[in-house]
Image (cartoon, rainbow, N blue to C red; front, side, top):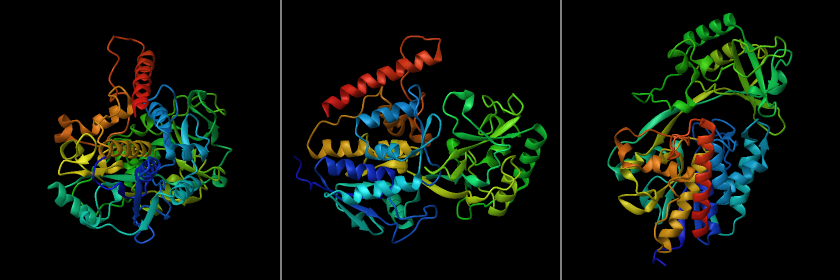
Length: 440
């Protein structure tokens, strides 16, 4: 056993920080968990609960033939506390893991507060000198400015960042079900999504209105770098008038029961809470002014009288150039007992952040117990995600990433059928991950 203290400081009680703290405490470590909300709010969060979901209420696909589904399979085998809470508070979302965000956050908060080896401190950490080592920084994209400046000094260069836009949420009772109908694409899953159809004229008018809408522009930053997976609709429209029809408004697989055919375009609404009283507009992250959002989104057939429980907004996301500044175990190259977890490491996506928090807890346990560093196998989804954010080859053009099949090593033998190839990759991932967990 190392001479270092078995008391570990975790800064940030978001998805990654909560998972990391619970994992460490369950491994027998004493944990001090800092969370500034309750003392100082962020531009995006609405509550002081831990693991609050801001941008969406989905953890992504549960399909056995998807990279996100495989990531959940692996996390479940590693006893993820956050995943269990998400499943306990799931809402219908077809093949995706939709979550009642309020009950989920309350459940995670209660779990953390009840753990006898976790001490919670509601306070703002403004400097790395405030916290003893070992420590985990899991402050996410909305890190306090003072701490961000101190981290910049620690790493010796500026942080990278992008902007993340939040989609609006609608009161379910205000959806016109005479026009919108419930279905899942190609009827593969359960009919959980409301679908609002548009004809060609309606679509083109809608696009023009988005083009001409007043936008909320960032005032304090010189560049605006949007992550592809959370692109504001107005940015997509700027790429071409048909972009939305091949993105979040893709109509294929959605047969309108009134016409018996696909509409020209379709807007989907996903259930946002267990009671099904709220729905978010899928893929409609936006930086349009509030008044413009209300006016333009009510042009969507079925949403003429929509009541908005929450309008879209924009906030800054920040992340480290992890391939350049972090070791493979996600500790700082300048301080091997200072670890980082979650979105600040350059992973994108709620559940990817959870998994990095889970992995960091395992890496800390290995290091403090003088074990040989053992990352998850490269063939696994977790190993592939870790490789994506620590590969030195990427340090010159590092960008955030979520899990996808492009990250997972391809099957060595040529296979023409894409689905069969994915199945082979998943089989390999599960076999290697199972062997790895047996050795932990």
